[in-house]
Image (cartoon, rainbow, N blue to C red; front, side, top):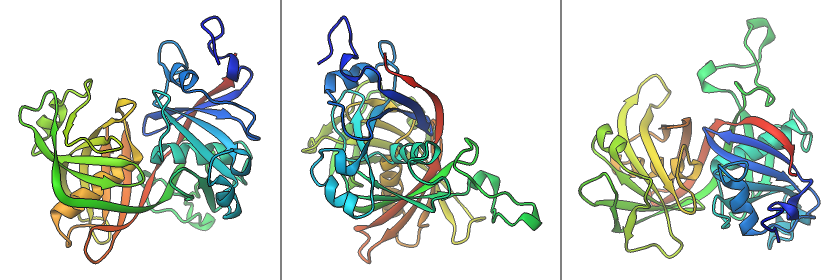
Length: 329
């Protein structure tokens, strides 16, 4: 355990990388062969923005077969050599993090842990194996890599071009009784819809952008009833759909309060939950592709619902940026 004199004694000498996905930021610790013993107190201090390196979460980079995490051996056999051992800002464990998976995959590709030109990267998580694919940054337009046309092909080494799409797996929503959410800065408590995207979420629809901007998320929202595992809370405002995307694209703005963290600049699983709830509320004829604008940037979500619209699969696309590296002293 760490002491007040040497707060990071238990991880001293460990290489780290700092990165973010739409400004949802993480400290990634290199522990390829599973030698570290991670303590919640150390994680919380490392993630502290004054006493540590600062981050919304801490990720241990470890081979699945060496991780010591239940079920990780089976994930290694399924092709996920690397496991994303994810911790919230307060040191608690989390099942999944969509922004974190992109940054994790970007680190694997840029540090040679997987081939730079790998078409897909399989990542082990507590929510099962996630498949990550390198994609083109939509802000750069439709690109094919055709040298004769002058179009560029994306490589994962560029901060501008480092976009990844993740198969986030299955989702489900609870279309039963709403959760009532009381939020500082929003006068009247609002109903929220429960959505499970690997993490538990409660999505609250607001009528206007002024309500979204006025929400005081320095304090945790109060949920009634309180979900058994707690919940992230997403506040959304739907915007007019775009017609310049094949099939149409829904659009929404989102802010999020993450359990164990507080308000963050982005949340990948939360963006998926927000798009799923928006599609459900807008009806079956609404778009299955959604642009989600968060304070830290822009994400894209693709929804595949079942016939009843209560379950399905979802993909998440967005950038990953690496900003610093060093060694824990």
